[in-house]
Image (cartoon, rainbow, N blue to C red):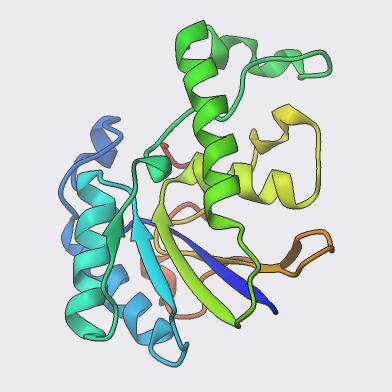
Length: 200
């Protein structure tokens, strides 16, 4: 049977403009999450998980408040992370980005993402619609894995706050990307990341 995996970046948080990677949702972020809940309302959601970070937890809580049948559960596998480090073929343009990342962080991120893919990409005997509320680079790694792209290719993939990326998972078949960074539920003024790169 088919599993549909809905990968969602948390709503905008108040400290994003100061370069912080987590914090309470801003008023814009709360509104993004409310509109996201409306978009998800027509989906027969099987399970919902979220990163334990403040921004992802608050996003999940708003969705659950508006969709009482949704009962989000935290998962440390969805924490913000660095999916992998530089490998042969990684463009040199990313060298400065990796200069602030330690080998330990890279290895931890690689292990986390391997476990996350094994945990959440789970076709089974029943139709499933699973929601993961997480962070930019985590979603980028899921998309990279869907295309079996080079290990570094999560670099350059950016998801907007409360954008929806959908993967189809079927036994014995490659992952299928059905939608990437879908923002149809958000008015233009709430669509962050369309002009300049987003922080993690």
